[in-house]
Picture 1 (cartoon, each protein chain N blue to C red):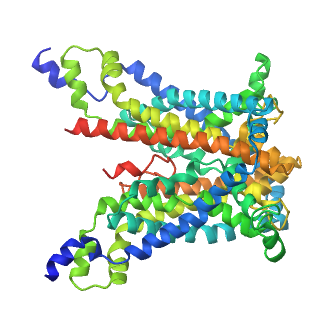
Picture 2 (picture 1 turned 180 degrees about the vertical axis):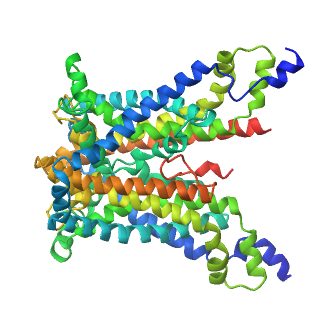
Length: 294
Length: 283
C-alpha cells in the first residue's frame, strides 16, 4: 500500500456502498416492523370508532378513576424512590466502606425479578393467608387494595433513580463537597448548593424513567390489585379489563394514553441526554453498575 | 494531633454517612430483602415431595421448555438484528437516524400491557401483519410463535444499547492497522472488531434472555395460555395464584428466582470481563 493510499483509506466507512445500504435497509425494516408499525397501530385502533367514541372512553368514570389511581401510585412511589436514590448515591459515592459491591448488586435486584414474582412476595406477606395477613385484613387492607399496588410499584421501580445517580456521583468525586465544607458550609448547605446542582440532570433523568415504569407497571400490580373497577384499577389494568371485555377500541383508546406517555418519556429522555452526555439510560438497560466504578 | 486524626478519618470530612447508609439499608431491607425472603420461607414449609411434585410436574416442565426456548430464540434474533442496528447507528449516517436511535428504547418506555394488546391485534389472523401471513398458513397470535414475537419486542433494546457504546469507543486506528497489514474488510470485522464486541454482545444477550424469562404483560394477551402448549412460567405462576395455590406458585417462583440470580451473576462476570477488555485497549 502506498503512502497516498494509506492517507485516503477511509477507516470509518470502509464497507462498499451496497453493503452499507443493505445494512441500513435491514436495520430500518427491523425497526419499522417491530417498533413503528405497533406504535402507529395503537393510535389507528384507538380511533377506529371515531374521535367521539375515543373521548367518550377517556371521559368514562371508570377510566378517570384508573387515571387517578395511577397518578396517586406514581405520586407516592417516585418521590420515595427518589429520596432513596439520593441517599444511596450519597453513601456509596462519597464514602468508602466494605461490602459496597454487594450493596450495588442488591439495589439492582428488583430488575432481575419477574413482575409476577414481585407481586407475589407482597401477597405472601400481607395476603389473607400471609404472615401478617389476619391482622392486616382486619385493620388495614393491603392486598387487593391501594397500599398493595403502591408497594408493588415501589418494588419494581426501586433501582431507577439510584442507578442513574450512583455512577454520576462516583464520576464527580468528592472534592467539590470537601472544598465547600473546608470553606465553612454546613452539611445541608453543601448538599443543596453543591451536590444538587451537580446531579440535577441525573435526578431529572432518573425521575423520568422511574415515572414511566411506575405508571405503566402491569404484572406486579395485576397480582396484588384484585381488579376492582373504580377502586383498584390502574390504567394498564383498565386496558386489560376493556380488552378482555371485547371492547377493543376502548382498550386501545386507554392504551393510547400510555403510549403517549411513553413517547413523551422518550422525548424527555433524549432531551436530558443532550443536556448531559454522561447519562446513558442505565435504568432502561440494566447493565450492572457495580463494577463500573473501577 | 488533630490534623492526623482528621487525616485518618478522611471519610468524615463530609457528613451524613450514617444517615444515608442507614436509610439505604433500612429501605432496601423493608422493600426488597424482607419481602424476598418470604418466598424462600414460604417454600421451606413445603415437604420435598410437595416441592418436587410442583416444580417437576409435566405442566411445569413444558412451561420451562417453552420459556427458555422462546426467550433464547428471541434473544438470538435480537443479537443478530441488534448488532446490525447498533452498527448502523454508530457507523453510518442516514435520514432519521436520531429518530431511530430514540425509538430503540420504546419497548422499555411502553407499558407491557399496551405492547401485549398491540402485538396480539397486529398478528391476529385479521390484523395488519397477521392477515399477510394467513395465505402462508402461518399463525402468530395465540401460538408459540406469538410468544416469541412478544419476547423479541421487549428484548429489542438490550443488545443495541450494550453494543452501541463499545462500538463508539472502538479505536479506528486498529482497523487502519489491520487494513495496512492487508486484511480484507470482512477479516477486519471478524478478527478485529467482533472480538471486542463479544462481551457486550453476550451481556446484552443475557439481559434480554433474563428479561424475556420473567416477562408477563406482553405475553399474556398474545398467548392462548393453554397448559403444555402456550403457557410460559410467569403465566403458570399467575394461574396458580388465581386458583389460590400460593404454595405451588411460590415453589415455581423459587425456581425462577434461582435462575434469575444465576443470570445476574453471569451478567456481572461478563461485565467484569468487558471492563477488563476496555482497560487493556486503553493501555
